[in-house]
Image (cartoon, rainbow, N blue to C red; front, side, top):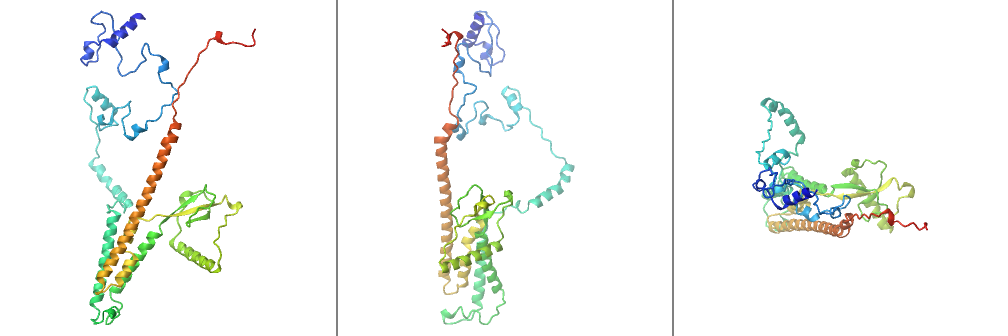
Length: 390
């Protein structure tokens, strides 16, 4: 036993020439004393001679998670750093062989033959057709809205120029709009185009403001303070089948609600806030309608809204400068309001996320993985005192 300890101490203090030169073969005999030397194992951590087991980590000890290392994306201590890894990260054998000095074997990738590629052409065409139009590289919604809105403005400008050229000349500027329709038919191309442009702006506005998603609050008993919340029947548990009603159904419901509110206002009645009966609490839940507008529709609404189309109808050769200025101000005002409101929602989300992060780091995470240490006490039978013995 003493000889083994002496060999281990000698191996820890001195190194053989072959080990210092980098070769893997260690000399079995010391060069000074001639005693056998036990080679020190590599790649393995062992407990020293004078090291107590109490200083080693306990098997059941809980080590807190290193959040700073996770945020900074540090490499784990038991793996190769990310910057030293080869591109073929899944090929563990080539990486280990390159560390040992042997050249890494390149991976062999089998390519498809000509016949196989020709036979798969119909299936590829069918797949691309099934993905249409999602596989078409479309521009961004902002660019598309600018192009469509500019084209609509240009068409309305052409319509107004054509109508102004066909109008009879008059010395009275205030009577110019009344004389535009004299001497020409109502069925020329300008009238259908004008109706099309006004209808396009109205359809876009209706589509933008009627895009909603439905959410059901199954755990909420008290009414939600929102005009978009209402109690509905929920006998089925299929949450994927929740779809918003059609536009016609919502339009009729809106007209009926406006009619009821009108007569309640005339008769001085208060709005009904009656909760559902206790016998139907299990089958009625609150449904919340959340507005989800698209970027394309909102940007097009800012550029060419129904207000712009009506302003084009009132534009003539005497007031076109002030009308263009009003159109620009209306579009800029809508765009500024939309950008500001989006920034407000984003700032609120950032603030709420930061509050939750501070709460987690201050109260939750320190209590999830507390540092514990096992302490064992061993006693002898002679130390046990029995009080019932004399």
